[in-house]
Image (tube, rainbow over all chains, first blue to last red; front, side, top):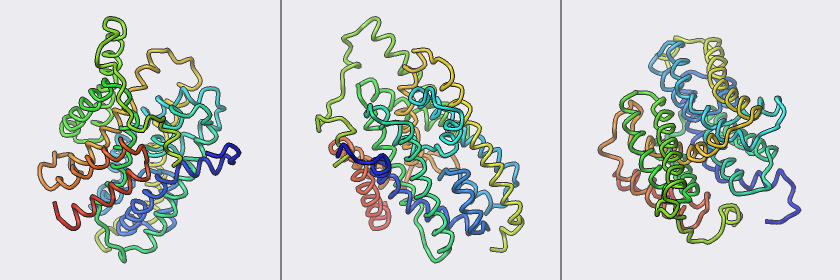
Length: 254
Length: 116
């Protein structure tokens, strides 16, 4: 990385993979919202105001089955509850920021730009809240423009949702791998995966994601605390081998 | 479409506003509370396990659970193989771009060409 690069360019470079994977998903979302009766202006508005792929797909599909407004809003509430976790886990990097910054930051935070920012904060000591906000706004720009284009193209585009959705799944797989630093983390991943299936099927809502995340992360925390206190040489605390022998930050510049 | 014209654009507008409000509340308040107060160390230690748990949860939901919250038992072999490929690429290269490109490419091949 060049040392004298301006902030906006650094942020843009880090958001690029996310921005590119937003294009097919945003297009698909725009097409679906258009089919659900949203006009172009409202599609732009919802992309900026709600800024969540999952939520916008849900709204589009609920509208096509004529679900009542209160039902949609209630489902949205449960769907979006997981953002409480994102905010909580980012908070230590945003300490001392003024209220307007927190307000604007929270407004455009979603799963994907949180993932990019969390990784940057965790691996790059020089990563600033200001740059994190830029990452949010660049991803918002990619998302909104793709949504509007999708809305304009409308039904001229045939989309395979399974394929399009997988762009985000691939992004989250990458993020999970990058976060896996000890053998204990692998155990937490497995536990989280099993709990997720169980809780989603049991609760029939995305609240299952929140419950399984809380349970898996708490279990990881207690196991780690127990091991550090009683068995500091446990195999579970071993670091996971990094084949590139470099930190995530340096590698992402390739 | 005729079937979806039960709501006017004004209804849609209010829907967007209300959805934005319920989306904003869980985004804003935890962030506000935890950036203003002193965070206890155990909370930070716990929060270190949140991202990896959440990402795994989102992946598992995408691959194994359908939109009606039922376990997908068939038809997702392509997604499973593609996920493993992405995992290997991510582990070996540590490149986000390459992971997403390989993921999209392989899932297109498995789902659109091989239909698995």
